[in-house]
Image (cartoon, rainbow, N blue to C red; front, side, top):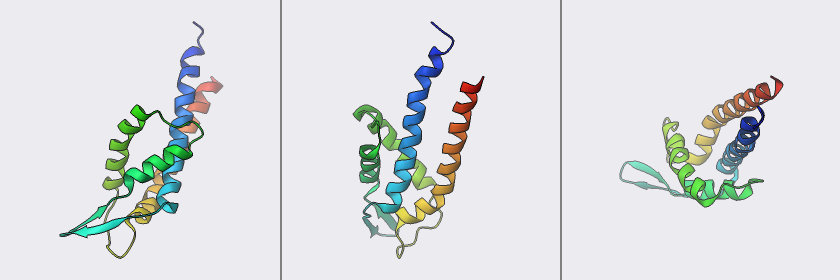
Length: 120
């Protein structure tokens, strides 16, 4: 086994993760939105659709098992960054605007770390 084997195994999933986060960011902005008010909470019924559509648009989609596993933390992450949802605005667009910078930073850091591994 060569020293490059771990990197060659890690690289495709890294690119796949970057692609997924880029697609989910775009999907949150451009996808259809469905939200409604139940008592004093804004309920968003489109996150699963956004995740599935982002996966469909990927160059190498996640397999169904990984997609179902990704659904939980992605949804939790999106809910965690909603600061003050407003019934008059789309929660998804609000989240996309807030999350956009975070995701771009995560993507950039991950690409830099992978590039750094290959430079060594």
